[in-house]
Image (cartoon, rainbow, N blue to C red):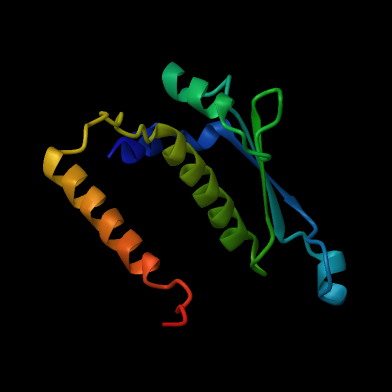
Length: 138
């Protein structure tokens, strides 16, 4: 649920979307139509909560520059609108990943019965392996 809360705090006016020409093969259409999208989002200047900004800035993600700017390039679709939507979805996903805080694991001790089962299984396995020796001449 924390991801949905962070997603609602993402303001569209803080995101800069620029149309660029797509790379790769595609004939003449690729060379004359700007269908790819270059999305830029400044984490430090955004209205996101400070703790979420800090978690985003500590992410080891190649899309986040050293200055704290998220750069996403989307060019998988032929239309500008679909590429814009795809880039925004990736930004929302990145923010949702930063908003998710996993629960701290509490260390527990194995029960006495589970320890006994483990040792018994090891002993049984050892006895089975002991039977694999060479057959002597008797």
